[in-house]
Length: 144
Image (tube, rainbow, N blue to C red; front, side, top):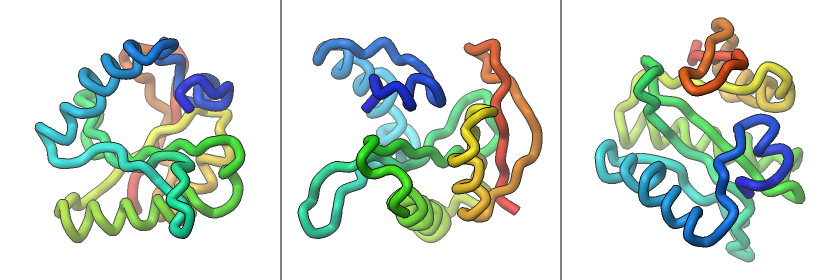
């Protein structure tokens, strides 16, 4: 999924090209969030078949004030409502189980589908910001 052209365009190239790269990425970027904060990205599966179709979850970026909700789905499962369903469940989990009072989200400036989804999830555009490791601006959304 991290090498899908849409991922690279809207999220960024993580330079994961081998199993070893993937393992190192999980060990350094994904697993520590669960260990330190008790949350991270969750796999999204189809209910009946249990087929993995994407991920949705929470990340606390050290350069952002609020916990960030994020998601990504495999190409065949985009535009079918799965991201909305997973996003709602993730927000509910954040509020009810993790007591996170306010969420944020970021998306690339040209990712209109993601912007619309964030608005449907109850976030609203706040301003353009620059990710510390990137030159391009991104859109910051905050819960209303």
